[in-house]
Structures are given as structure tokens and as C-alpha cells.
Image (cartoon, rainbow, N blue to C red):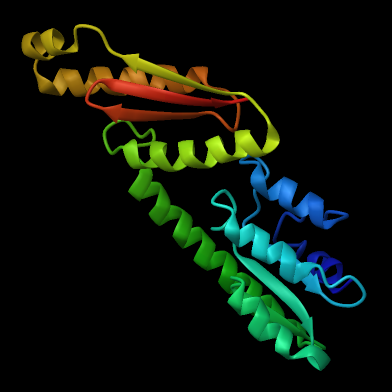
Length: 212
């Protein structure tokens, strides 16, 4: 398949993972520790599954931010409009010029890196460097849906730092901030699985999401 050929070509600068079926694409992309920066899908004969996989990826909150490029046949040019309508970021038309395709793949990866940085700053607490309330709300929504879909358990741990107001009154807000950073660092160190998430819920309150 063309996707496998392009993957081999880009292997010198990207870490490539190929999957044997549509189900494997969806399963892999849903897991935080396996989620790719870019997905290449064939919309080629005989299966032509790429359009449907792209639609499902873009309909799921967990995977909708992963850029998807679809590989289409020049003889089925209408597939390009369909691909863009279901959420694909770009299309590669076969036969293709290798240098153009490499440039387009690099562009999508650059856009993804910038997007991830913006997301990180928007969802990160500036004091403790863990997720903020917005990041927590987004993660909980996605993990709740995934737990329902995969019939897995989901745990939530709420933490309130005892006597923090008295600590602040005695030592001052600067030491209080230092205390919160140390608490966040200690808790983050205890969460060792890739899917775990620690967030500052507000003030001296923290929350941890523990999938599975």
C-alpha cells in the first residue's frame, strides 16, 4: 500500500508505526501513550476504508486533534472533497511527487507541534506546571467516554492540602506558592503510568485521574 511506502520513506526522520487494520488504527490512536502526531490512511481500492476511519477519528474527542492525511487515487478525484468534509487535514493524490509529499508531511507535523505547545500552555497551571482546571475538565470528559466505550474502570482522587491558609498566614504567599509546587511535584512523581493525569483543581486543591 502507498501508506506503507511513504512510511518507509519518512522513517529516517520519524518514528513509524504501521497497523494491520482499521480497528487497530482507532485502538492505537485512542491510547495516550500510543497516540501518533500524524496518521496516513489509504483511500485506495479494494477496501477504501480510509474515509470512514478518518470520520470516526474526527468524531471522537480523544483523537480529533490528531492530524490525518488521506492518500487518494487521481481517478477518484471526488474523494478529496469527501476527505476534507470528514475532517482530513490534507490529501495526497497518486501518483505523486516524492519531494512535494515529504514537504506536506513535514508541514503537518510542524503544525501539530505548534498546536501541542499552545494546548499545553492553555491547559497547564503556571504555578505548579501540572494541568489546570481546563485541562482536567477536557481530560475527564475524554477518559469518561473512553471508559464507557471500553468498559474499563476510572478512578478520581481529590486532594486538599491541610492547614494551607494557616501556612500562608504564618510564612507568607511566596512560601505558600513554594509549598504548592513541592506538593504538586511529589504527587506527579507518584503517578507513573502514561494515562494518569494530575491537575490543580483550584487554590490548594488537586485532583488525579487514574484510567483503568
